[in-house]
Amino acid sequence: MLKRFWLWLGRLLGKLLLILLLVGLVGWGTGEAYYAWKFSGPVSAEEQIPADEAALTQTIIEDAIRIVEQHRDNTRVLRDAHAKAHGCVKAEMTVLPDLSPELRHGVLAEPGKSWQAWMRLSNGNAYPQFDSARDARGMAIKLLDVPGDKLLSSKATAGDQDFVMFNNSVFFVRDVAEYKQNFAAQADGHKVLAFFPSWDPRSWEIRHLFIALKTLAPAPDSPVSATYNSIAPFKLGPHNIKYRVVPDPLSCPPYQLPEQNTKLPNFLRNALYQQLSLDRVPACFALQVQRQNPQHYMPIEDTSVEWSEAISPFVTVATVKVPAQDFDSREQNLFCDNLSFNPWHALPEHRPIGGINRLRKAVYEAVSVYRHQRNDAPQAH
Ligand code: HEM
Picture (tube, protein in one colour):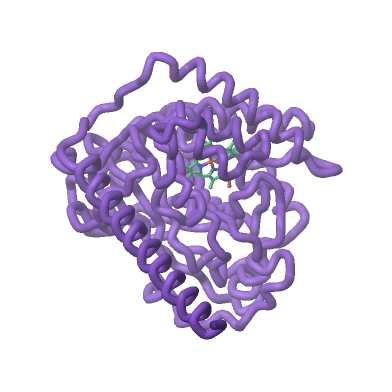
């Protein structure tokens, strides 16, 4: 009797498993087919600005300031995002000597030209946490003494051309409207529900939830071993592009980072210190750009969509070298904290485009001004 019951239960569970597998396969297949259809065909090569974007931006600024205040530590008001730095290091960007003429614009106009820069490496979270926590990792580069009027600048940042990236290739929202809804829900503590704004399944953003989960990834071995993406699009002269910074170890002396104790809270800073300050070995990267081909689905107004590398591969336009150096001093860490990176600290040839970038213009500026005032600190670039 008992044996027959177990056999019956086994068969039932087997059938259930098969049904679940089939449902999963059909769901996956339908999703693939749906996105292949939705993400196909030509897109606009121009920006399209929704009428309510300015009003939405204003409310996002208010939410951002609220979050900055929530997370302030005992002594200082930190950034609203990427609050924890692994260090600010000196770097040098050099335009490829044989850069193709159609890509020679802005800071890339002169082949062989070198720019001095600051590079800030960070965790993405709104407040500092252990480096072992799943998170995005950021890289911000600020080229110094770049001549020419910028799209946005203060006295301190007049000579700056900034590149602001993190280590995922897509963003977890498409545009300002979705950012507003998602950010407000997350600020109220609804992490996953933020992607399910109503009972109507048409409003569910399951694909974006997966992007958010993937963005919160385990730490790389070192901040200089990750690839960092602009995610949002930019101009490069007449072209629409995305850019990224990839490790280029072959351009540097060979180096094997000794194994780090990843249980230590700041092991990414330790890894940087070990390579640059103790072992005195530089780190090398390449700056690459990918051009939009509007005949294919490479949208400007949707940062959740990756531009296909099969259709438009990234090409190297400059090298970025981080020389061996001492960077972990009290003065330099404070200086680093008081830096302001903003994708709109840019020459018109590198104009940020798309809704998420338009949003960033006002938000970065407002949060930076706010934290500098609250800390009674001068803006250092
Ligand atoms: C393409 C998508 C984005 C990327 C690649 C990105 C990347 C970064 C990085 C790397 C930093 C740190 C910069 C530093 O080291 O000082 C940063 C800061 C910041 N991000 Fe983003 N971010 C993106 C989108 C956004 C959006 C949509 C918002 C909100 C509207 C936002 C708000 C901020 C704020 C407020 C700061 C701090 C600014 C400051 O106080 O100086 N970011 N971001």
